[in-house]
Amino acid sequence: MPELPEVETSVRGLERVLLGRQLVRVEPRRADLRRAMPVDLRQRLTGARVTGLGRRAKYGLIETDRDDTLIFHLGMSGSWRINPQDIGAHDHLILETDDGVSLSLNDPRRFGSLDLVLTDEVEQWPPFKALGPEPIGEALSASWFKRAFAGRSAAVKLLLLDQRIVAGLGNIYACEALYRAGISPLRAGGSLTLVRLKRLARAIPEVLEEAIEAGGSSLRNFAQPNGELGYFSKEFAVYDREGEPCACGGTVKRIVQGGRSTFYCPRCQR
Ligand SMILES: [Zn+2]
Image: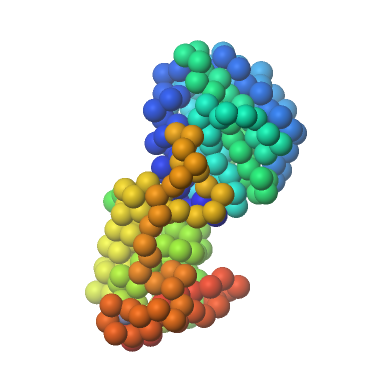
């Protein structure tokens, strides 16, 4: 499943081929993904020039000179392919630029989405309105967590997956950040001291930025946006490493919290 580093990597890959280009062909190949695609997608995007790309949480943003922003979500299995060799049943949107590059949005499980929003109204778009700060950049701080966690008895791991507290962090990187900060995922959010929250606010962007640097973590069904089939694999400290030794001499344990697997080391995460 594409996590934030894969989305960021996709946006950076798309930027290389789309920025400043005109879209000469826009071909939706079905009416819906997880929900209906905009019915006027082809009409509004054909002939438009791409003026900017960006990311918010796990959504990618493609802005055009017609004041529209195409917002994509890769769902469980989505990826962009550049100059795909063949177009199949899982290619749901084809774009072609004025310099002859073609792109396809491939999504076998169709949990992704495509929306067109007026660029001025992107901040107010319902899925974005309630989002908390971005997990990379300068937005996270110990004082933000202090306020967001105040009085909360829920486990810190669950609070980190709440989009209103941190936007788009995801299960893998919540585990990795807690490990790096030395905080038990079971600890009540409201009980964490400011010193430990500082470590957490630092660990979150660190683990994500390292993964972005590695080109995104290597998970099934996800190809790099330059059209390569291979994808960098990323070593995780605790994620998916149940029973393996931790650097501290302890053993990585798996528990289930809120229906999701949590991996952690009970010896060095307190
Ligand atoms: Zn350990």
